[in-house]
Image (cartoon, rainbow, N blue to C red):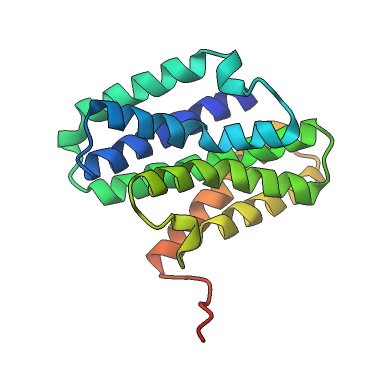
Length: 199
């Protein structure tokens, strides 16, 4: 279950990277690079911080193959995507929901404190998008007013609250990921944002 969620998150982030690169009119090489760093950036940072080296995508070629396949498919169907920004937002949102629970579970596996696990989940979900946005010359979403990292944190809190109940682990994963996705969708739909501090 954990591995499947990790692969699904990789696919979602790879597609969001492709859409961002296509939006910036990059060539094929640029598109693949953006897809790759978006998909593995957060997981790489997480694994380096917890000392799980070589990092996961270096030990398992499935990640590389999945990213390449997802990128090729996204490139092939790009002309059918009428609303590029909407599609980018959707795949990015799915990615952060899935990667949040993956990062948290990795922290739990290493016996870390729940707060640190939530931080790991948030970094896993956010860092690939940060790299993508920087390389695409955009202000990273996490630094804008949109609810992004906050949704990951609340999803992480949900994860640990559900662990106290007699619920199967795979159900906890699914509910926690869905909480992140739904919170971000609702925040954007109803224009809910964190307050900005002015001078």
